[in-house]
Image 1 (cartoon, rainbow, N blue to C red):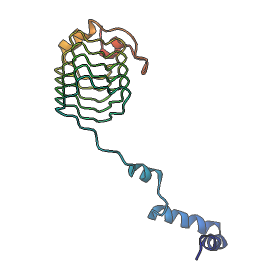
Image 2 (cartoon, rainbow, N blue to C red):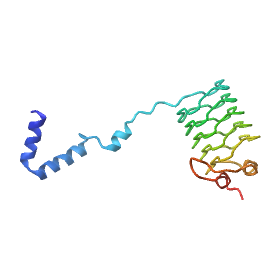
Image 3 (tube, rainbow, N blue to C red):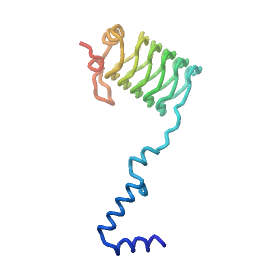
Image 4 (cartoon, rainbow, N blue to C red):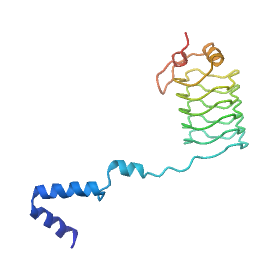
Length: 179
């Protein structure tokens, strides 16, 4: 039976019968629902650069969602405007790194050395930063909303905090809870 004949046969049975058949088909799974289609979307595995020597590398504007840079040497690397949501930079050498305008939401930068790094206008919402070093770090316009920092780090960052994040509209001092 061809499709056309099938639909004509359904139409001849009446509107209520056709509606009931569509409900059964949806329940049985003959027509994929948007939720099912979304659940089957393919996401590539995260990039892994753990323990890599990547000094001076250019990652600017790149999609680095959940990428792994744990214990990597990224000295003077460029992550300007990169999307590194959920990325892992634990114990990484981030001396002089450019994170200006980068999205680091939910990233892990614990125990990282951010000496002389540029975090200006970066989004660090819910980012873990415990034990990281911030000597001569630029944070103007950075959004630290709900970031995990210890008391000494907060005092250090509040002493230099200024600006408003252009992506979120949040003041740096407010995002840190500075008084």
